[in-house]
Image (cartoon, rainbow, N blue to C red):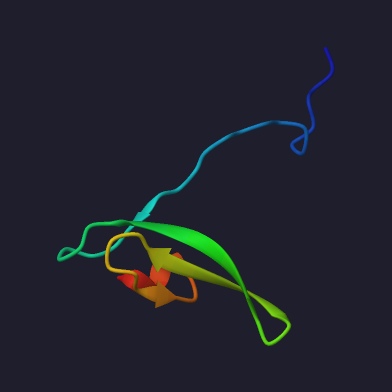
Length: 58
């Protein structure tokens, strides 16, 4: 039988990020439009802290 190509395989896994100990809220990615430029930022739902990417919350 023919093999399925690596690009045709489907995998649905989502990685969830959480703000460190004091807050514990979930970090969500948002797209903002500032000065005519699109900017992607990560924002904590509880404490409203904003970083460039989710891994910077550590």
